[in-house]
Length: 606
Ligand code: FEO
Ligand code: CA
Ligand code: CA
Ligand code: CA
Image (tube, rainbow, N blue to C red; front, side, top):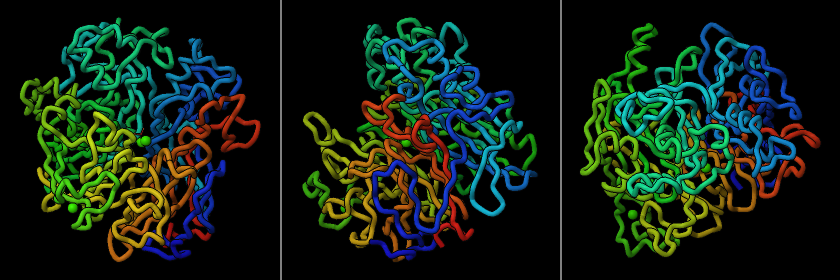
């Protein structure tokens, strides 16, 4: 086991053992509290949560369902307070409503689900003597954005024929954001939110007969007749037979200004359209934004956007207005990776090649460049710029980008500039008719995933070439195919299915997992990326039954996690719960945000 209390600075805690408890378990000497639960009122006038009397009106003023990405922003002038921004990726109706009939949802249930999707902004306040946080209800910055709120499309695909609908003939105003998975926080004080598996909300793709349109839908996984949630019964825009372009208005990165509660959030089309997991920005040496993004699908790609305008410094209104245009102009790239070992040495079992590392070089291939006023040029033969932006996956296909094992979160280390890509798993790698292992995705039937470390040429964020190596090949350390940056494997925690990526103030990498295939629950892990302890992975906490670990934020004295979809187990329902977290037997399971801190008040892991 990793030494008790030893480790790299920031990771000196006794690792939590893998387990299947219906609880958040934390290291000895640490405490926790539930910061906010699904359904807690955050807006003025919203009622307390009542599981037996849920309404759409109430939910629209309450914290949404299935919290995923979290951001905490400093709130000037209000001591001890911060602004929490949360994604609400999707709804689990069977765990929300007593007696829910998936074949016959009611209008009220559907409207509650609309209101439980989206984003929350809620001010939180720390307790004086601990790391506990609690929500400040009715703060003027508190806000809900849902599946029916107004969003503006900006950038090169705004106004395109491909995004116009009957309700929005100009193609600039979209109702709602859907399936917000992970995200990012910009240096100019806004938050980014990836719209991920939007395909599941749209019905009747089978009725789209034009071969080009049908192929585009298929490439995005939009298929079938009725949708799972039957939203098309209650709003025609979810019916592709009636509104064929509506699905093209989802799958974007949303930018929200949490400090302007009256602002309309924007869908930034210059960042492309795919199943956006997250969007994490950094700045070039001359102050332009670069955003790293993954497309979470088996055999899909990862991308970066390099802005052409410099961020304005200072707190003036004009500077802020300028910064709200940064993500509309720049070039969108997709990654192509080449291994440096002979293909014959990549055996699909994860055996290290003879040079001892899965590594190589790569190129960022430009797809399109957006300029002022929404004008854009395509760099992909046979596709217009608008097509590149709306059907970005097809552009990646055309230029031969590298098909990865489900790129989830991607983040640059604020300490080193190296970029970490969580590749969560790919159960289809190497199956008949599918791509087999390559050096960056070295295992067939990949159950546990890997983490790739990317070094931009000269460590410049806008470089067009890079070096890469696999930092972790996940799994049980006893499994010979695993690799922990060369660290001795008898001293690391087992890990499976890395999803979200974060950094602590010391520069350690933290990884959260989704879908652990090792027989224990998901969790949160810290690992040093530098020094002699590089690769020493330690588990910091575990999740309740059925939950995935989301939104990790590691501050000096606090770790914040979103417990997403607790109780989501096949066959579970309100009547037959698999989890009763966080409130115990007889209470509805509720996705919630948890804060963890040290009993002695000192910094995390020092
Ligand atoms: Fe919503 Fe890719 O995790
Ligand atoms: Ca190699
Ligand atoms: Ca995720
Ligand atoms: Ca995931």
